[in-house]
Image 1 (cartoon, rainbow, N blue to C red):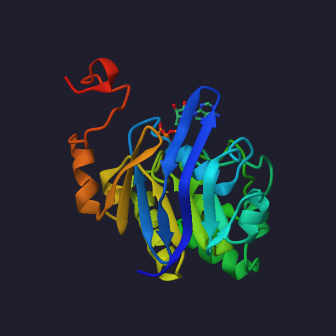
Image 2 (tube, rainbow, N blue to C red; image 1 turned 90 degrees about the vertical axis):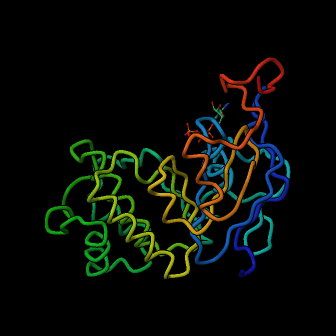
Length: 249
Ligand SMILES: Nc1ncnc2c1ncn2[C@@H]1O[C@H](COP(=O)(O)OP(=O)(O)OP(=O)(O)O)[C@@H](O)[C@H]1O
């Protein structure tokens, strides 16, 4: 495997009383699609926010390295400049901005031909969408696809995607899978947060998180039992099958 592009070393994040990340050491590689899975509240989005250096997530212990260099002291703008991008569960709206300008804003090549191509790549007809406003008149799925188009246009090195399939119909999902394949082919590192066994199939490896910790990591088949209700035992406080002190009954 190639050296890691992005890695965390003993990464922990305490917010108030809660330890949201707890000693996470993980690495992410060029041209790989890494799935990040785990139950609600496991800390997946928190990890994505921390990797991206968002406000409120920078007071962590441990380190995050990009190309072997610590990202300590850098914010999301600097990380974006170095090729990192995050697609949220609920994409930002940038109310009123035209789709064309929204996509062009971060595009490596903001030429109209490229903007049209990325819209087509996510299955949206540029003739119908380039002039639309990014506002509530777009459906949730349309907004999500437009955000994905904007990410493709950025030609990022590292893409963090939080549940790219949520609110997406079957046809659109196929476009997302194609876009993932293209990102991988272009050498991007994709970190895919998902609750879907279908999406998991498109990853090269998977990481199972729970309670802010890395529980297991390996080929997708190793992690698949989690999706079949056969979770790897851990001390998740919300598990009904756990007795006092977090032990299995
Ligand atoms: N800013 C915050 N302050 C305090 N607690 C937080 C904060 N952000 C998240 N949490 C808590 O941290 C835990 C992890 O949340 P996170 O959103 O990272 O989980 P997740 O694995 O992405 O879950 P889901 O699958 O439900 O999206 C949750 O218990 C959440 O309530």
